[in-house]
Length: 189
Image: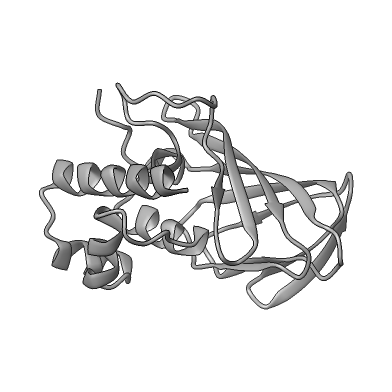
């Protein structure tokens, strides 16, 4: 977990540096406090997935950039799992590819776990496919209950959230598609 915190912090610092942004500018763009951004960069705080989404959306970078190794870094596992206090565990299956315009995750939400997401960039679409368990998906204050094998596509440029109302974990795939005009910045080589 400490290595994940440090890696997320290095990604944030690198992405902020590539843009030439101060912590103040980054805080204004993301809605995350300057103090919290500093703690994340120093590896002192593990952000929730919702906070990572706010940062990624604000600096126009795909979430998978924060959860994948920096070029030259090595990991024992092919893809990092990110676990947060909301009960959400997220694993990138396909990191963002600018040629295809999407990234895909395997997500597990613990019993009674919940995660709320702020709106993504205009035109971003999410595709959720439940693998096991039951997921309550909220999109702009409308609730949908999805069971194993059920799927839903929705505009992610509005408030949305995921909730597990059962006593067992729920697992689902989340494919996030960015229209050509809203593609987040591709990683630097």
